[in-house]
Length: 262
Picture (cartoon, rainbow, N blue to C red):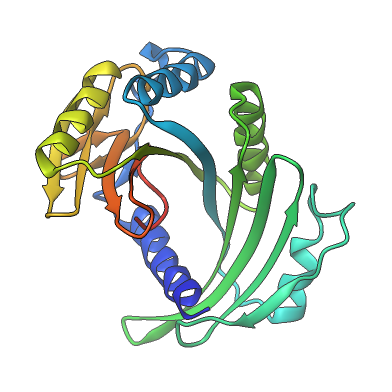
């Protein structure tokens, strides 16, 4: 439970940085030159499979700033029940005070055969230049256990649709998780990471690593769009990490960025 709260705190900080910083904005200038989304999804699966990885999860996550008001818990609870797939399900809303001071959160989750869907509203009071700023964020996450690109595409558009009803210009990204049996050494993890980037016609703009993991970030003309930072435009993030308690190496691939802890 503590880890969940800490990740919620990290998410709030991340979305605040992503959407409020002028140095990091969504970039769609080259989106028209990219391949169709379904072809990109198929190619990502092909690349992961070619590395000996088995895709075990596709996670679609997004958020949007819906207004500048501070909502109380009953209001948040009422809001999360207004949108499908929650309206026709028997689900309990979890409401609690957030880890961040003066913040509240309402969350609802429903499960189906191939997916777990979570919608959360975060309302907070943030001190800015000596005065209080009121903000309510909406985040939505769908975890797919299906390998279907058609289902992934439909869910991605539905997440954008629902978040778009709360506010303008929602941010939505996808994280793919695959598993390779056994332990890969650092040099092999780097080789695989570079191979993924090459296969997706991507250039590497940033790389970091330690003994257990490696992370690469860059831009793929195949994917298009993305975000812009001081290092340039990026829309692809890959990470490999060995999990000793499972005896496996995990590959995470995020477009435009990995949106989960690893």
